[in-house]
Amino acid sequence: MARLPAGIRFIISFSRDQWYRAFIFILTFLLYASFHLSRKPISIVKGELHKYCTAWDEADVRFSSQSSKAGSIAPHQLPDNETDCGWAPFDKNNYQQLLGALDYSFLCAYAVGMYLSGIIGERLPIRYYLTFGMLASGAFTALFGLGYFYNIHSFGFYVVTQVINGLVQTTGWPSVVTCLGNWFGKGRRGLIMGVWNSHTSVGNILGSLIAGYWVSTCWGLSFIVPGAIVAAMGIVCFLFLIEHPKDVRCSSTLVTHSKAYENGTNRLRLQKQSLKSEKNRPLDPEMQCLLLSDGKGSVHPNHMLILPGDSGSGTTAISFTGALKIPGVVEFSLCLLFAKLVSYTFLFWLPLYITNVDHLDAKKAGELSTLFDVGGIFGGVLAGVISDRLEKRASTCGLMLLLAAPTLYIFSTVSKMGLEATVAMLLLSGALVSGPYALITTAVSADLGTHKSLKGNAHALSTVTAIIDGTGSVGAALGPLLAGLISPSGWSNVFYMLMFADTCALLFLIRLIHKELSCPGSATGDQVPFKEQ
Image (cartoon, rainbow, N blue to C red; front, side):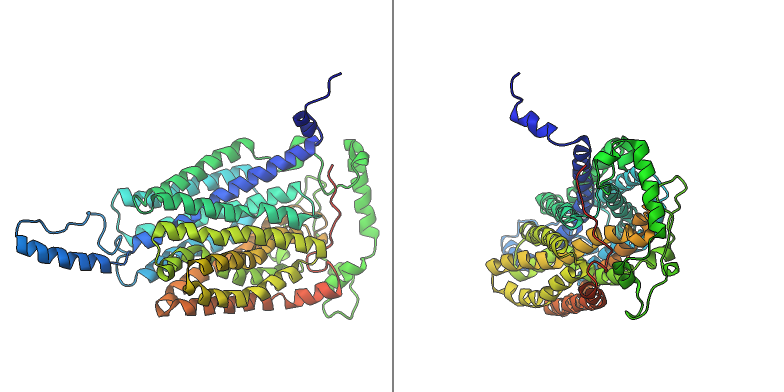
């Protein structure tokens, strides 16, 4: 018998379950990358919506003096849909406040909608819910760009479009995190989700490049093309997304003994036995340490938040207040509020900052800003690897936040020295700012959503994810708004605000870091060994 080709041997070396997990990993990566791809154009187009008109004015003076002498040349005419300072109504002196209001409209709606999205999403099929959100988001992203072609100068039109787009985009994050959490267990979750969370940076990079391609010639296409991509990915989601391993008769990654679980009847019997024994088993030292209120007394089992498991069809969804009782949810949510404030300020204002400081046009500034996201990819993966190795999520976030504060100060001073310095600081700042943000929104959210105090209730993951990311989105809304209000007084003041926010994020982790160091694994729950089936 002839030996199989190397490619075929590679394919059959992986089990059916492993191929399905790889497919879901890639699919959810692309789905959420498209969401971020559609959020980036507004930051790229800002430099085109308001242009510095000094050069126009000087040219007009010279041109008018020459034409008065010649007496036969027609005066300079501008296109009907723009002025010499950009696109109305963003051509006035208050353009920074108006652009900041656009960011705030989107992010405020996103923050409010996120709290509701998780509760709604866990009660609806993920595939339908996510498909609807992607199609609607594509439509409203494109609608913003249609304002260019239909010569719309109403500020209210752009605000309403941003608000609705922010609401429908809240369907994305709880859905994809829940889906990925269903397919991947806790072990190596930091690495897996650190790599997976690079979709944020990949989406931002692609969004910057796509929007930058048309920004100087036809900025309307900078929104329409990303909107079409999101809508197309929504159709892909409807056709291919698999919500849970059991839908295709795959085993759960939380099961660690593959041979013993090959038979479905045996699997159900063993699971029931393990649940019964777990109920009768006293609390382990780690859980006792986790649930101690003052670190001195003992913990009674009745103090635990016990919710129905997912071993039966009668599983009920966790309530909002029930999710808040999970140890660590409040602390990580408040930490993410300030971490996301810093990250989204860079997301929405970095291209304009580069334009002002390095005196580049909108296209080149957009391309250069992608380096922040490149650094974010490495930061997210690094945070995941370190937290998996140390089994200390909060301590990993705290270390990166501690290093981020002085880095932001250095960025504000070094970036004015030239393009090379800006490139280096963009990469470093992107890694340190995006690392904690990526870790909290992925691995930490999944850890808390599958916390042992929930007793296996998988329906909690969507709500916990929505609470954490929704709270973070409040900071995401405040950051760009504050940047718009503060930037007229100088960009240095914006960086001082970012350093203050970074310090606040670190302070909310102090208690969890102390708990991790005294009781390993207690900040987000135990670390379950991860074995491929």
